[in-house]
Image 1 (cartoon, rainbow, N blue to C red):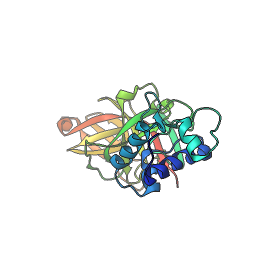
Image 2: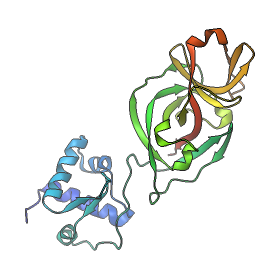
Image 3: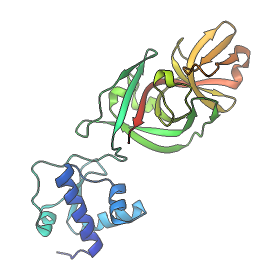
Image 4: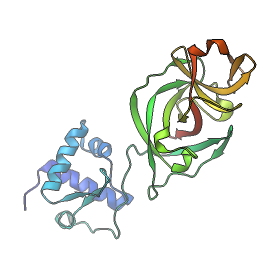
Length: 249
């Protein structure tokens, strides 16, 4: 049996104690924070060493499902809990509120639980819920949510954008929320859309009115945005909102 370095033993101890206390393993980020390791690559190097030495395994198809071996439990003198650990997701918010948006109305969605299947939604840049701001179409991070949050859309059809501003507070969409958007170029009257206007993205309710389109905020203090149909080249619908994610605390 290969000996462990002091750091490797500390990481193994942290992982096993986390499983005993929480019933699921820590994420790579949580291990790094606990051990004072800034780089996720650095954490992974230690985890790979623990795997190579026979103290740790990775669950099948789940890159963050850390499973201490029987050898690890014996070495640390910790009693192994009954049943397999529940795989962890990263990031793991301390608390969150989920709200689905369907047919122009909002409704509470089921709370995400660690023991049910979730889907990973990419977070792309930011979106304004006030004056439009530049939308950076680049992968920023991701969030795992209950599939019901996506409505009838598939995972590949949905992306998320970070809301900035308070123009949609009447619909329960607040500054800092993650807005889930189904990619499509058309919308029905009254739906909440993400629209690109002259290279900037904004979220509003969509109302076609004759030769123009009204993008209506739900904050009564703010004015709607009007777009003439003849200026359609400078405006486009990116998608329709299907849900909102809010991290609490």
